[in-house]
Each structure stands twice: as structure tokens, then as C-alpha cells.
Amino acid sequence: MSGAPAIEVTSLSKRYGATPAVDDLDWSGGRGVIGLLGPNGAGKSTLLRMLATVLAQDSGAIRVFGLDPAVADERLAIRRRLGYLPQEAGLYRNFSAYDLVDYVAVLKEITDRSARRDEVRRVLGDVGMTDDMHRRIRTLSGGMQRRVALAAALLGHPDLLVLDEPSAGLDPDQRLRMRGVLSEVGQRATVLLSTHQTDEVAAFCQRVLVLDRGRLLFDGAPRDLARRATDRVWVSDVPDAGALRSWVTGDGDIRNIGTPPPGATVVEPTLDDGYLLVATEDGVRA
Amino acid sequence: MTAVDEWHVSDHELERYVNHAIPTVARASVESHLLECDRCRSALSVARAPTVGTFGADATWSRIADRIDVTSRPLRSSTTALQVSTSSPLLMLATLAVALGVVVSVAIASAIAPAASLPLFVMLAPLAPVVGAVLAFQTGIDPAGQLARATPLASGRLPFIRALLSCSAALVAVAVSSMLVPVGLDDVAVWLLPGLALTALVVAISTWIDPSRVALALIGLWAVAVSVWSWGPRSRNVRLDLGDFAAEQRSVQLVLITVTVASVVVAFVRRNELPVWRSR
Image (cartoon, rainbow over all chains, first blue to last red):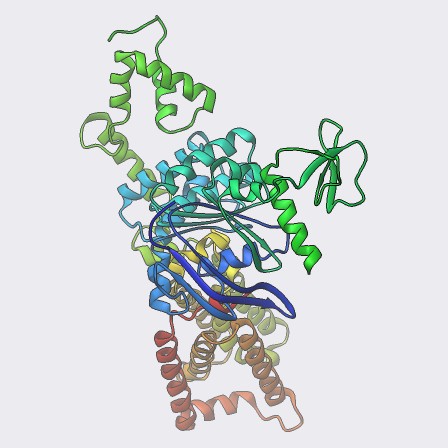
């Protein structure tokens, strides 16, 4: 990944009552596909909403393309280069997929009718909705509705794509297509997406962030996250009481992370292991 | 290079390939065939030609699509602003409900309790445009839901234009219902000025705090004031009071006009300070 940072946040904080959602976060990111991992309530959506200019921070600074979203004119300039997929889009169910995306295209100031039609067809094609573009939203499956929303986010070739769980509800084939589209976008733009799926991060993200309770626990390449668990993963026949986490694998083995006991069968770590280790060790420290 | 076998990619498959609408495995198969087949590559280059062309079938199709686009959206064709403003079926329905509610309420009161119809009209007339305007600021009113919030047009203009349209529809309904009660043309100022002032005030204040709260507070105060005026222990003849107000209370009218103008100026200056930017 290379390029000047599209996003820079400094001492960024957001609280909901007494609960910190994002806690004193410093981070910057540029071109490429960046995955945001973390458990539910980690602050992923809050961070993405702030970066997508739809939520104001309590304190700290956000700069997107060097612009401050708290300033109305700069916020407008950011939105002209932004594509945002919220976690719950809440689409009007009586519009057709085409009409819905066409409407969002108007909101994105694509006013020329011919150009807009081409662009709407392009993004619906990108997400594999060409054959279903004239069906009403209410007749589409959850995965298809998600793809319509993703198509709307892709309108206008945004320089920054902020996607909150874009693969939720997609089947494997659709996920594969989505990865292809986002990887292509990531060649020239910044794609920041949240997910619960480490395999997704491993498959096409150049960089991964791990967030928990609003704090950044890890920032680096996916392989480096996996390496965090080097010599920290072992398999056994029964759960190891000394392990930080233990679970049964599909093969029936018990996989453990933590500090292996003498003589343990240490195995090659996966991204899952690295993520669980980072998240769990932070929980133990807290 | 010539074709390597008898099979070729059909036009339909090719179109689906161009539009990224075939499964990954089939796509890989088409791609491997295209590498070997001149004929299909030629067909692909035609399929990839701009769909909005200027010649022959492409141009005809383009014109047909344009016509369908226009005729299917009669309310959304004149300008971008009007197009997006009227693209909220929920807002249109809610505005219609408010407008009909005012007319029907006053009509029913006129029929079964004529004495109550004028106070009811005085109570509802200024509130209808307020409700109409506040509806336009609700985040759930946009057909694109949360998707709309991070778009450039959502940065101020859209809710204000929608508020103006919704408010105007409510005022038309109030004007219609005024024909059902003993309110003369001279008394227009009695319902129009408070309506405009309250609505503009709510819109202006909504650039700082949630418009629903402001509207609820003002609606409550207005309802109590009209109730006390009409039915309280020191109530007078509402019809006479209205006449007095319209004819003599020029200073009050001036205050209402001033509040309206000042609120419009504030709302315009702070048009980018949307409630959604401050919300959770």
C-alpha cells in the first residue's frame, strides 16, 4: 500500500453516555483495502460513521483528504469524494433497485441523465444486479439489498469508500465478486471496511486494524497479525486450562492460544489465531 | 488466430459477461475462450461499445429509455432539486395526511359543533405547516435511508427544500379549510403570519437542536394558549378577537413578520448545520 494518507485522526474520542465508543484514537491510512476487525461494540461502526461525515466526534481531530468534516464547506468537499455503506441502510422498499441507485446518484450530483444511467448500470453490474435491477427492493433477498446499497456506495468512483460490514448476508460467490470489485477500487482509492470475518481480511486486505472498546490494538499487514501468534498456538486432546482461549476445530482437535505448556504440539498460526490472541490479551490486561 | 472449437459465447452470455452478471466459474470459462477465439473477441468489442450511442439501435434504445425515465417520474423531471425533494414517498404521504387532517377536522367541527370550529381552526392553522416542515427533517423520511446522509446534496439544501414544499402543501390545506369557518379575507394574517413565523422559527432553531423537540414545545404552547383564549375563564368572543387582531394589532403582526424574516435568514446562513451531523 502506498500514497498520501486519505484519512488522519488524532486523539479521536466519542462516547455514548459513560461508555467510550472510540477512545483517544490516533491513526492514518492511505490507498488500498484496509480491514477493520473487532468484536461487537468495539467502536467500528462509530469510527466509520465519523469518517463518513455523518457523526460528529466529541473530541480530537479528523482529516479526510486534509479536510475537516466539522466545517460545513469541507464536509461537502469530502462527501463529493466519498462512498459510504452504513451497517443498516434502511432502503425504501417500494423503489426498484435501479430507481434507488439512480436516486442516490442524483444526491451525489450526477445530474446528466445519460451519464447517470450509464453509471447506475455500471455499479449495479459490478455487484451482479444487472438481471434484477428492475425488481422492487421489497422483493429482493437481504444479500441482494446489501448489494444494491453497495452499488450506491460505488457511484461516482469515490476516492474513499467507507463500508460497514459490506459482506453481511452475501453468499460465497457474491463475496468473491465483492472482493474483486473492492480490490480494483483499492488500486486507486482508499477502501476502509469493517468485518467479522478474518478470512475476508486475509483474502484481500493489504492492512488490518483491530479495534476493541474504542482502542486500536493492532495496525499492520494481515500476515503480521497472524505472526503475533507464532509459537502461541497449540493443539491438544482436551481443553488446556492454562490457555487464554480454547476451542474445538472441525477436525475434533482442541486448538489453544496463549503460552503453550512444555511439550505442547505447537502449530502454524492463522489470522484468526492472531486476532483472537490480540483481542484476548488486551481483555486480560483490561 | 481462429476459433479452437465449435462453441462460441452467445450474445446473451456476452452481455452478461460485460455487465459482470455471470457466476465466477462461467466468467473464467468465457475469459479462457475469449483468449483463443477471434470471433468472440470481435463480438465482445461490439458488446463493450458505449450503450448510450448516437447511431442505430443504440440511439433508439437510448431515446426509449429516456422517455420511460421521464414518463415514469412526472413529479421528478423538472429540476434536480424538485426531483429529489419529491422523491420521498413517505414525506409525500405524511404531508398529505397532515393536510387532509386539517381540512377534515375543521369540516367535521363545522358540521357538528360550529362554535368550536373557529377555535379549532385557529389552533390547527399555524401548526400544520410546522408539522409539515419538521417531517422533512426526519432522517427516516429519505428513501435511501442512511445511504443518503453522506451524499453532497444531504449537506443542507435537501431538507430545507423538502420543508418548504411540505410546509406549502400544509398552507394550501389551511387556506382551503379557512373557507369552512367564519374567517374573512382580511383575517388571513391571523392564521398565515403565526404559521409562517412558527415554521420559520422551528427551521432556524433546528440548525442547533432537534427540530422535533422545538416543534413539540411550540405546538404545546400554542395549543394551550388557544385553548385558554377560547374556553378559559376569561375567554372572549374568538371571532371578535380575530377581527381586532387583523384590524388593529399591527405591531403584533410586525413582530411576526420580523420573526419570520429573521428566522429565514438564520436558517439560510446555517443551512449546512443539519441535525444529522449532531445526532448519534
